[in-house]
Length: 318
Image 1 (cartoon, rainbow, N blue to C red):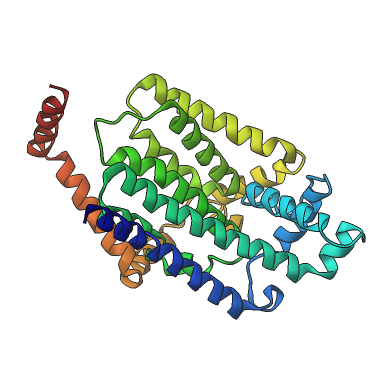
Image 2: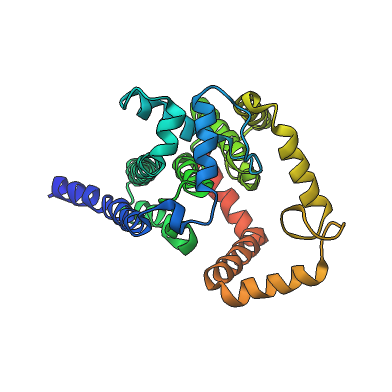
């Protein structure tokens, strides 16, 4: 009976990954040709990857900076071309660009599907809680925009892969306060965060998530230093084009418009509050999540709650 229950639980862990894979394959089939349907710079990533595959790291699009995607695309182009015709790699990629993009797209779908299953499997193995494991696997489905672009050659689907791997580490320790983060997990979390920032700078706030789980100041400092080491190591090959990236970031900070455009200034207060109001009135999931976060912070800061947590910690230690 117990063995049957375990088998049933493991079967349940396949539901959301399979559902995710089916949705992404259907969306990929609907896209058919990337050059007809996708506005985001899919072909820019393809040609940057082609540059990398040929050993040239002076890429054109470097604004995100998107380096992880350039390397991933370049590695795929190089490997795929090994099993194709003898014509030059540049000619092959330009002539059969949609073929290369499709292979890379399906690979991204496969990576996220596998990562999603591993998230549920690792969580169930660590906590023996099928509801918690399925809830963690459901996280990619919260964002409609994230799901709709999961098969596209762009930064966000690859960031999803990194985030799921990071969530595997976080879930291992977040639900068991007596469990201290291991040295290997600390290094892996540092690498994932460094790679995420090298993919897109908006990943920077995720630095703080593993930081809350690290128990000693020395380990926290090591974690932050390792992020810098991994980030620098990843971006070093692209050093010639990095000034364009840093100049773009500077213009974003010093101008009020989109992507470094508009008038000089840090923030346009009128547009800021107008967009904030639209976010709360049109994105109900964001609004509910924000309110839930505020309530959680409020409860955690309550003296009675904090005293209760400390009492439980003492009981665990004793």
